[in-house]
Image (cartoon, rainbow, N blue to C red):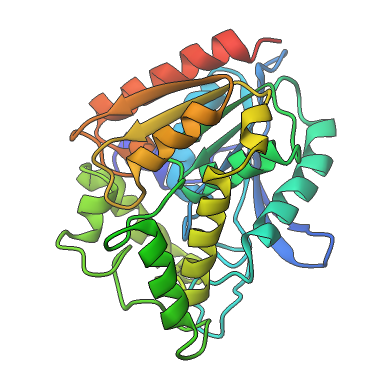
Length: 314
């Protein structure tokens, strides 16, 4: 492997993978990489998107760790190494997004008291959506938050309202936990899965590499129940009054050409957050901004570094 692949495809020395027990007894897989600095810069809690695993972001973790940050993350319930909620281990299911929020809030309560300050939370896609909802509900009080291509609305035929109706119709015509579609990240796409996620061939290849090394981590499409809950949760957040009362400074990275989440919904929610800086990317970026080609990724990391230097001071 190349030196870059060694970073992306190996657990960092000094990091630890363990299991954390949620209040209801569910086991969630967690990652912790304490800062090696004599005086840590602070602590980042990073949460990935639907179907993701934290291994996909090891390269980005290296960037922050080199600056003195301690890094933590956990796999959302029902994906990665945090068990499954469907009888099919390759289908991502959830009863309601409130379950994700309960896990996040409980984890924050046990994580924050022992993590060096300042505390920062960063979320990609579904992770960004859930972090925004958690902040609106005061489930966490970080010094700053970064939302990367956050799932504030999902692409749907005709409109979000019609898409939600259609998903409910499909869910109620069979087992709600059954897979919503056979492959790819969304149905009826004309592009490959990679074209939806990143233009970088090598970084895209990291995910199947980890799946081959650890088959138990692989997940496939969502269930119809998950799709319905995603429509419900994103609609609720777009209409939330609590978002307008958020006190946490937010940086939101938006990919205008995103084919998975709706950029216009991200911008709408950003407009409701009292203290929110928006950085937009054009056709050069697909959904996974932090796993894009170097020009895109470096710009994104630079924006995050500047934001945290200004808004997450010790």
